[in-house]
Image 1 (cartoon, rainbow, N blue to C red):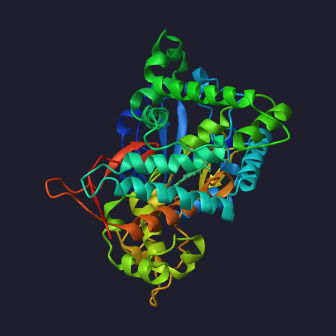
Image 2 (image 1 turned 90 degrees about the horizontal axis):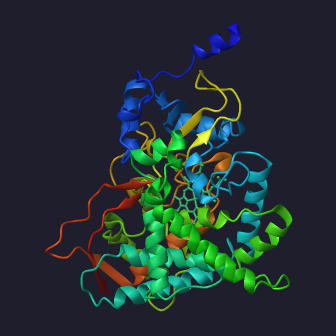
Image 3 (image 1 turned 30 degrees about the horizontal axis):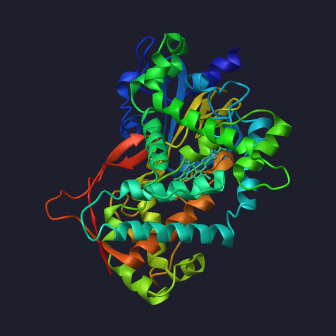
Length: 454
Ligand code: HEM
């Protein structure tokens, strides 16, 4: 008991908290990373918060985040339990992959997902060809706008969705297919249901979810997306043939025969789709055009071998991810055992927030952390350099499983679009806003551009 009291005296500092609410009123749930950045300045790189009655520690800056996720990988590999997802069918024994507690079930799901994604082409030419083809469809959709102003977001989202959709369900959609439009819209809305105060409250006080119609109202799109996935699974089951595995779903159905019913993996993967391509700074950098014309030319599609010869485009794509801050607060972790971080004691079962935004904009590491500055990734000879604080996909045991796929998509979509178009903001429209809205992922606010054929 005395030893434990002594350890708790080294618990990370934090702001005073209110009874029951803890520090909830000090966090802006529509921009949590900004609240964390302010508290970081006051309390240091490792500080604590009271999240209703849960203990939470926020880890900031490259060094502390790396210490937690890499040096003490297993101590920080757990995830908290999310009662708010129980109404969707997630429970303590069936949690899929992303929100799964650290342990044998997570390990099995992760191994299966990685292996199946690889079998279906992740990291291989076959997937590269599929992404290239999708980039071609996206360019055609842009060019059908004939230089008129449009919001690019929905089209980019459809292209990115199609890649993961065909990997998972074995088919792609035409961009104007009504079912597809609805699907993309539902996934987008279901992510928005994650932001704000109410979802946090329901997670911490789960009996509120028992009030009739509350989950239906607060999580209506998450429920709709689950129903859609159920319908797709049902269709797949009807035509499933164990001797002919067509896609990720078929492989998963086969696996389910072995491991039991855990259908939610698809949902998690589909939810992790991210659109980072159309950020105005990148598209208006003329230097890339020269590189594209020199290395790829106009007569063939870009491929992944080009990346090695395109340091500038590569640097810009990396810088977009720093500047755009796509998953600013990462996903919540939880300590798997009592542990120490930067001299502080953190007990088992403490919720851990890795403030990835503070890593990608770490003032002690990056030369110009708050500017769009592709030279962060270029050496004096203009060659591409990797930077260790580039952690948009996080690090350690729970590092993003789709990193390779996402990197391939970013490069091929980006270069294909710039090979075909120059982009400009329509005269009567404001420039796209620098900040965005937060719903686990940082989305840009809607804006209009013109895509002019080169
Ligand atoms: C987890 C970022 C695309 C699948 C994560 C995490 C981040 C992230 C920050 C949390 C890691 C942690 O808990 O520490 C991104 C970014 C992407 C991207 C920035 C695109 C630019 C994808 C794609 C897939 C995917 C395309 C699908 C193949 C996953 C999965 C996890 C995950 C399954 C959970 C891993 C686990 O808990 O073991 N991602 N992601 N991600 N991502 Fe992504």
